[in-house]
Image 1 (cartoon, rainbow, N blue to C red):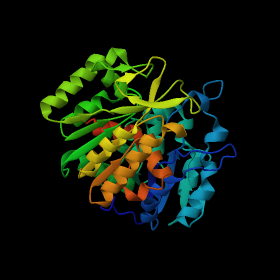
Image 2 (cartoon, one colour):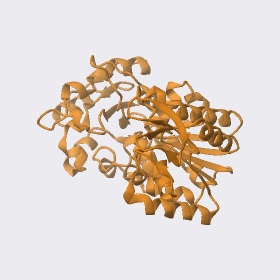
Image 3 (cartoon, helix red, strand yellow):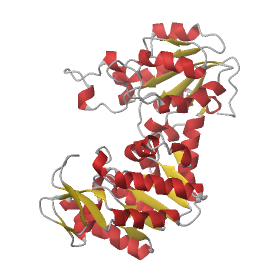
Image 4 (cartoon, rainbow, N blue to C red):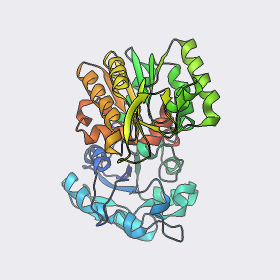
Length: 400
């Protein structure tokens, strides 16, 4: 972006304002908006406007009975006041993202003014990567800046297809997008060693490609969360009613064998906090992770595992953390995730480089007030995952 002249030009900025709102439509976490502010402020000397979407994932509870998005809930009008405060300038709002009304609003912009367009997800052409919709968006700006890393893995109209309507010297990445790429690349391409990846979450199947890739370059691979029990069962352990993907037991063994062959230390939790039901108020105890009684399930890593993992984390020079160590949303089973967050922060204070990416691990460092004590907190869960897996992201490739 620093190589582009914005003087006297209208700039179409693609941002990711997928922020949570309460029932009164008040923003409850503005991190993604704040993350885009440096890019927008850098362009403030030029005529510019942003367009964004607020719901990259259309979960069932977010849809109306006819399958459409709830426009009252997901209109970007709710964000205008807060964005104006953060930027320190009034932000105008257009109820359309494309078409005559949007074109007229864009044409009326004066230097230094900001216009927020309506949610692109309200248009069917967005997710389809529709050429006509993309061309209509492109009409609105002289320059296109993509600062939405969180949606870079989706070949949508506003993240990917629109870029082809701008010449190479009239399109680029915003600061957030560039930071995400630079920090992820630092972990993959030129890390200080030893390198430790901490991978959690529910299912091995969700992370197979990531685990395969990590084994190629890390020194230590810590596996936590429910996915650990598939590995433990594959090793012959008794895991009670813990979540296990029985169709992935062979895959787990193959990953264990690959790690051994590559000299990578793959660590599984020695002990677990177990419960007799999947509930915060269930009875709970601690057990050896390979000797969990029938009727009980592992919902967090135990004290021994926390110490074991912390020792490895504190001896590392590069850290990648993606996914929780337990059922983080239940307070009684959040201790393992918090222990990892504290260890990552402590290692960072001793000079390690730490990259945190993925919903619950990001939530953990934010809730504990540790986000400024790790090196980088990614705004893109799925996009960061695919980038680390080695996939080419459409939103990045479109700029070449």
